[in-house]
Length: 101
Length: 468
Ligand SMILES: Cc1cc2nc3c(=O)[nH]c(=O)nc-3n(C[C@H](O)[C@H](O)[C@H](O)COP(=O)(O)OP(=O)(O)OC[C@H]3O[C@@H](n4cnc5c(N)ncnc54)[C@H](O)[C@@H]3O)c2cc1C
Ligand code: FES
Image: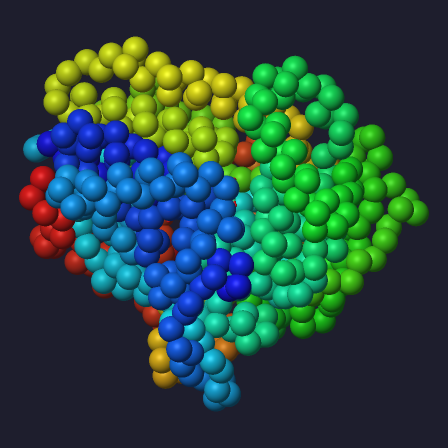
């Protein structure tokens, strides 16, 4: 932030698994979580292993997260917004999004 | 006559400007919120960054692209459709033309379509990472991903980073992380100086590139980043996130040299083994693929009439090559859309830099290769496919015991490559373990698509672009 002399707007609050975290306007969910020192927010379906950001550009789907009740959102793409309820998720998430591949 | 350009990185921007300069209406369709692609990735407006150039190289070239885009958007010649994720491009014969199908916004649930007389694919590439024990730990990120989060989100993954793998991207990533305040404990590059010596003649013919490399090297020195050439990552350690990595020297054959292992504490490992082109949209259109990229002729045309491709979707070669290819593609498309035969002499300068940049890229590819015996470092329980959690043992069993001889059979036997990312992260590793050449993946769609959108896609959807 200092390096590029950023002057972001005032921080606002989101919740992560019920805990309040500060976020800056313009940040993605992943950036907000990283800033708060959170590196993992999902466990895998098979091994229950923790995962967070891997590719950072929307290709790998490792960073899936539940935002305001919608599971399987890519945290590295989705912008955070004031009051967002962000939840970590287990396995494939808690509901079926009806996506095909 | 209008042209849809898919991708607003260096290639797509150069193409859109070249075509718009020649009076063609362009719809520039891109999944990101802001133009720039990977190389010129911008922080969001809301950050009010006054000196974003501190994280960038070749800022002046970016300013020219940015200002040119703004001028054409103002004049109504270019429509920039940001946050449009293209999942399919459909070719019509009667009347001839194309329909670009996209999903809107970061949540990618709402559809939009764009009609065009011709299409130019400039979707760039993504990073290749080969597996090693511990590569699924949180805190292990792709080198480009670390760079993307830094340039686009102004966040660092942690305090102490190791940058590892192979390829020209590692240096700017290490410099970027160090400049932003991370302690970069080592830059671990598996290529050795011998490779450079072998290609010294080619490298010497590119003084500007050498100077660029030298300036990165100077920056690394200034930030006191230790460089470990001819070394590789053996394993990442940690429970809930990476806590240390073990690196080791490579012998001339590309095997880990016993006794050279050392453990480096860190909370971030940024790793990459080169790049792969995005070819899904071209493949679905039926374009010929050669090697990993979309095949193009001297004008950057694919073998499907009305479809051009430029930049890293045609092969990996850096931003300068992407700019040259985009410029040529845009000029060729503009002439042909007007029913004229383009005159290649009019883009002689761009063609010359394209030739030089391709030669350079070939030498770079020869020098930067993952360690020849990388697969031996995989333990049986090391995951190869991150999505479907397929361990190396399953892939080895498919090959050694079940007789699989190609990646497709391995996929059917193990489910490697069948998950969310559709093999984008594991295909190179599966190919390597199977011992076969990389083949095109033949994915039906470029993105996951909600079923509801698919069900409606035959119906008339509103065309979001202005009249072409
Ligand atoms: C994560 C990452 C970081 C990188 N960082 C650097 C760096 O710091 N320095 C450096 O020298 N090189 C970097 N590179 C290499 C870089 O890719 C090239 O040098 C250059 O950006 C290629 O230009 P391009 O125009 O071909 O593609 P890109 O710049 O990749 O642009 C492609 C554009 O297409 C869009 N796109 C892709 N698929 C779709 C789709 N289906 N629908 C809609 N839009 C789509 C993308 O959003 C992007 O804007 C990086 C690469 C990656 C993957
Ligand atoms: S980190 Fe890969 S999709 Fe988000």
